[in-house]
Image 1 (tube, helix red, strand yellow):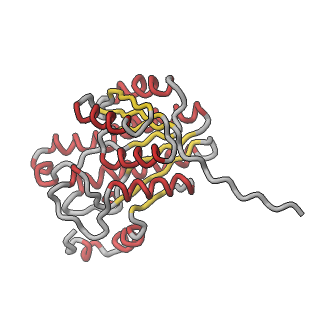
Image 2 (cartoon, one colour; image 1 turned 90 degrees about the horizontal axis):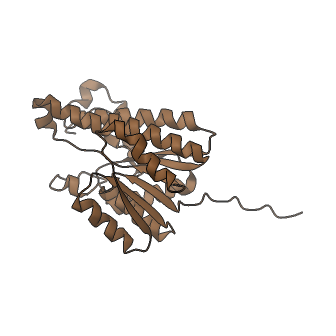
Image 3 (cartoon, helix red, strand yellow; image 1 turned 60 degrees about the horizontal axis):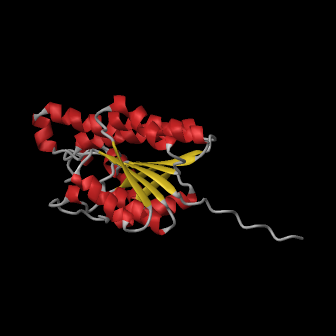
Length: 256
């Protein structure tokens, strides 16, 4: 009897589009995938020296790296911007990693700033996510990786504006993944906890804090498994489950 062939592992992407091209987590993912053979990288973000510097650092690793102007707060431009990228060649992975943390206390006093957080993290992601998903579907294959957050699992007094925007993003991505099931397009949601990046500099790091490189390793593992949800670290799945089921009267007394 012939030996059974081992199941083929999904191939890692050779070309990627990063929406949020200066994100510390996204750049860690890009570096990791370049080390695994990615040859083309598009960094999409607001034109800035930081975006060009990020592109230059990735080019030094060997791949073809290009930048494209992208603004989450300008949904009307998303079809043209992303269409241009996909017209240049196949994209194996679109990584949605843009977002703003905001300042909870300030944003409560200035509702328009809270609206900006919501529009960036949720409305902009809905627009860009739908456009990217359609382009991937037109290709017949590819992955859409959505950087969510454990903060979206349950509202916390200290960051409910940011958390609510991530909760909306997370549910959107879940529904999009279901809608695309069977089309050849894979949607993966990544839910990191606190990550030590420039955006979180100066904030006290809670238990289970991670580096961008550790989150990138979890993303690679998820792509290899073709996972639908990735927690970084994995223990947060159980922490979030426990917190989600706490009575509200108990939960509000926790220092979270």
